[in-house]
Length: 261
Image (cartoon, rainbow, N blue to C red; front, side, top):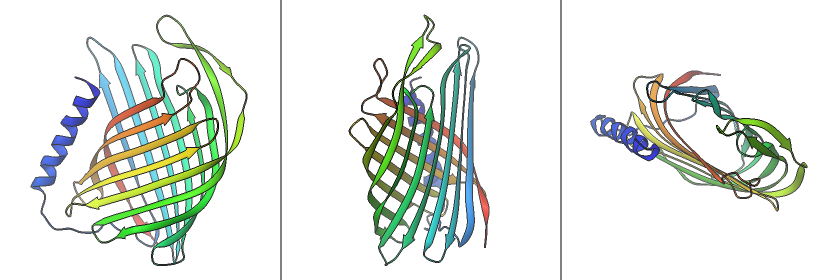
C-alpha cells in the first residue's frame, strides 16, 4: 500500500470517529500558566520487508498575561533493511506579545538537524508582527511576517550501492538575511475532534525552506488523543543529487499535560 493510501485509510478512520462523536463544539484553549502535550508513534514491519520507524513530538506552552511562549521539539528515526534512512531533529522556540485584540509581535529561534536533507544544520533567529484573523471558540487563524538571520551548512552525501550513507562532505557555511512567514490554523469540529495546520517558511538567497504540518486529532478522554498527521518539508535548493521535498505520514498517541499556574 502506498504512503498516500495509508494516509487516506488513517484519515478515513478518524473521520468516522468524528461523525460518531457528539456534535457539541468546545474550544480547546491554552490555559494560563504551563501546559503542553507529547505524542509518539512507532511502526514495525516484518516479513518480506524489515522496516522500523518512530517519531516523537513535544509542545510546551507558558501563558502569562499578554505573553505566550511555545517550545516545540520533534524527532524522527527510520531504518529499512538494516540501513538508517531517516534521522531528523527540530526545535523551535517562539514568544508572542499580544498588544491589541488582533495584533501581536513575536521573536523566534529555530534549529533543524536532518541527516538526510543535504544540510548538516539550519538555524535561524527572527522577529516580526502577527495578526489574528479569527479567534473564536471553534476557529482560530493567525498569520505572521518577519525578518531574521539564518546560518546553514550544506553537505554532500556519499552512498554505497545499497543506498547507505558511507560518508558526508560538509560544504561552506552560509549566512544570510531571510524573510519569514507563518500561518497557524485550528478548527474544533466538536467536543472531541479538531483539525490543526501550521506552516513556517524562511526564504533567503541560498535556499527557501518550508514546513507544513497538518493533523487531525480525536480525543479518547481528557488526557489521551489519537492524531493522524501529514508533514511536508521542502528545501528549494538542496545539494546535488538530493530531493527537494520530504513527506511524513504519522498515526500518533497524544498525551496532554495538566496545566499549572
